[in-house]
Length: 178
Image 1 (cartoon, rainbow, N blue to C red):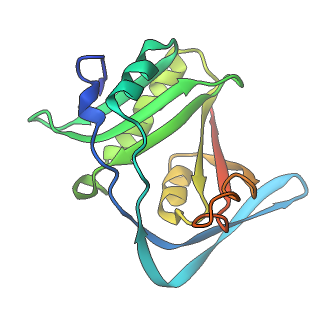
Image 2 (cartoon, rainbow, N blue to C red):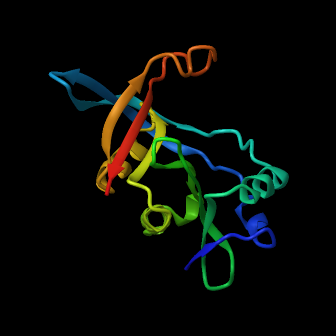
């Protein structure tokens, strides 16, 4: 069940991001005004996790601002299996800041349900689509976004350049137009 978080329920979104499999990278190519890509699979897959930098006060502040939502996927006993944080962006797209699914609930439709709820929220807000950013080494996420109908719109070589552990990663921006 998808529920829009309120100040009283947003604490349910406070679960730690769990590691995900890094099996390869998406290799983008821009030619004749069109993005395409191939996949480069790694010989030795590994796991990666991102630090959670959103506290309860951050969520409360986020919800206090207009045209923002935190969507929760709750199971029958009220346990939060996944979350999505989205806001209206200046370019008339919904910017999906974060989508996370607990490891034990992955590949069960939770991410797809959250993504569809984000799209429904964006349409309710009168926005033209959804955009987000992910890393080229998050190939599983890139595959998921493509499966959700998104198209690669940009690759940024500088976004992570100041961080030694990610300086070789590309930021990829994905778009879905309604």
